Image (cartoon, rainbow, N blue to C red; front, side):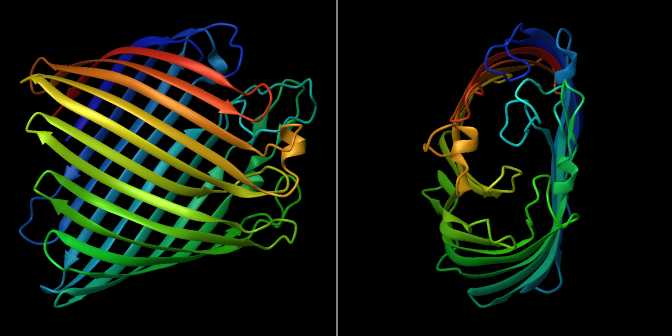
Length: 379
């Protein structure tokens, strides 16, 4: 099911900076497709979206973005299956991010470096009555473009390109078709292309994560997966402390009525960094989205999210915050969107989004309001 979507709008803070000099009108285009097999055996499901935003008054913040996911399954026997798949994500780093560090206090960022990561997995699972054992092998690649500044200097973020390989064993037991608890582990090794990063740190590492949870369905209205666990990553450089902490992940769908759906998501991710003395960052995000079919051809949605990113390491607060408060970022986002289907293939869309970032890095807070009106052509 391919589609193309275009729209025009206005962004009050296209550069995501503390004191924007001006807002900007913008044009945005998205292309994508979703695929789902209709086979009697095996399965293939995926989606891909790629977009580009062009800001007419602030050209140096034009940016692409993309996200994609593919999951496949091969049914060997009734109890044995192989699975495969992959993900891709493309985004940019804003000028006020701690990852961008100019060589002098007078220099300002003149671009938004593009960063992308892609990964794939292959594995298999076998059921012994109600007990299921699975094992996946994974590989991922991450690359980042260099940052440029007004004084002509360049920060070589490409020195932080890396590859990760790992394995994910999982054990689950089906107490009933509506309740299936599991235990899952992740063990991986991360190797950088360069022996040292842009600040001279050796960031090769190995890590593990352990989580336990369950997939479930309650009364036919609430279904999903929830889990809790712990992550630990050890770095080659003795100056970098372990990146560790509890994790909480959830993906729940509540069908309040045939016309109203509530989706709750919670994610915990560990991220690499270029910040001196920092091992990495742990990001925790909670999101709620409510979708309601107002009419047969009119759908409205509301979304709100809260995200906290905490950098871990020794002596990182003084170099960025000037105090002992630590280095962290808190992001609040909310929005509403409406879709009016003229036909099955033509959809009019309108949206409003609000973003607010509070950070301990001086001069990096920002607020942004984005308005968009567009048209979607789909099959």
